[in-house]
Length: 221
Image (cartoon, rainbow, N blue to C red; front, side, top):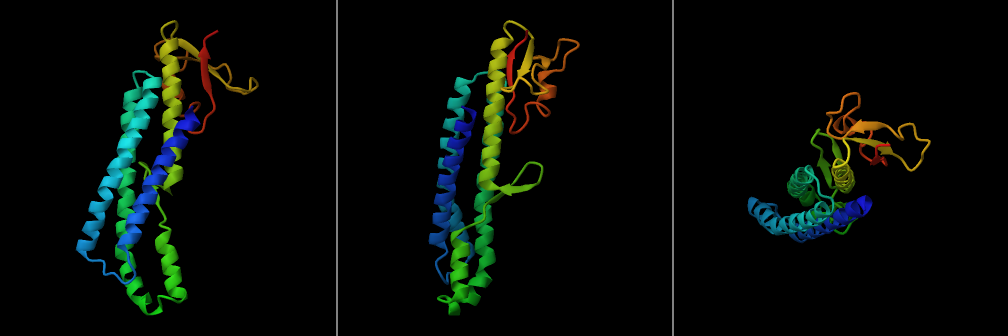
């Protein structure tokens, strides 16, 4: 379920980037002068594509949280949606910068539009290098970043939905791996963090339930 959610959101994002690239290419006709008006027109054309993606993504996220309810689900959903809004806007900005930066290159290559320089330019324009900046300031490939964030959201939301069910019977739970020989298998913790002598679930998020983790939770034995 976790990977399926991430795959679905990634596919929706790919469609957005494809549509955005198409709009960009139709704007950047050979020899066009990139004026403020051209840039504004592109931004206006990109806006509904972005909003459509965000609306579809929200529906996908809402469906997932409804199947995995917990006190933290809506907060995690809002955080992911805000991140999608941020990076999807950054994608538009990436193309705007490419439009402005390619102006001089375009003028230089007009006379050689059918030659090596023109072909190289066409190839570069048709394959925008979408990268996004994480909240920590690091640059990542856009699709890889989205998939990682989507999977981690789905993973923790699923874990916390399970813990919400288990908390009705006990504040204690344990870490479970498919490989019983895993060093962390059976590690006991307090769901709420109020049971003395046990680490809290919150304290294990970065060390056990981290990005790409396969750890699950089981009832305390």
